[in-house]
Length: 181
Image (cartoon, rainbow, N blue to C red; front, side, top):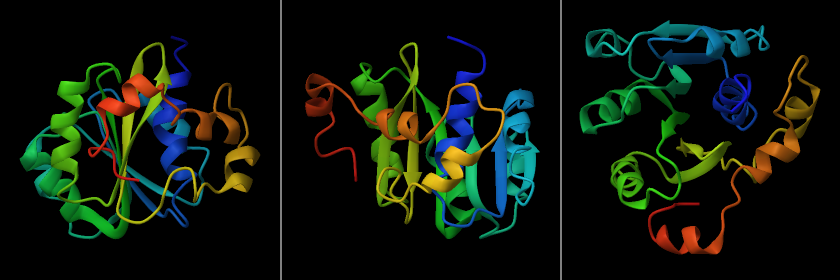
């Protein structure tokens, strides 16, 4: 996969869905490329922490509009992420390939405790992510003007955003009752 696809898709899908993102937290031990994409949003405050649970525990309640996480989302991690998100907040987390239904179901069932919208999407090259949202739907609430007016993108645009949520019926059937949209 081209090195620019992953960070563009991890950042811009959430930032172009959230109505007014002001504060974003990136949880990653290697956030250079994600941080580079966040620089395209000069009006958004971005903080990066590593995958150390102590750093996550120290974050204040209701601080973030979006959390972009490369930290595996077990129950404790997700509870802290839920705590630090605003009432309309979103989480983007990397995921197993969509065909790995059993692994993904475990994560999506845990996310269902905190989010009303849970939708996996394609990152390309058999990689996927999950957008979990308390309010905004990633295909119904896309901010097309923001998505299509960003400068210096090599992959992401409004059409890619919407298309990334498409999946074949044989996979969609496996996720019936799990995906919340």
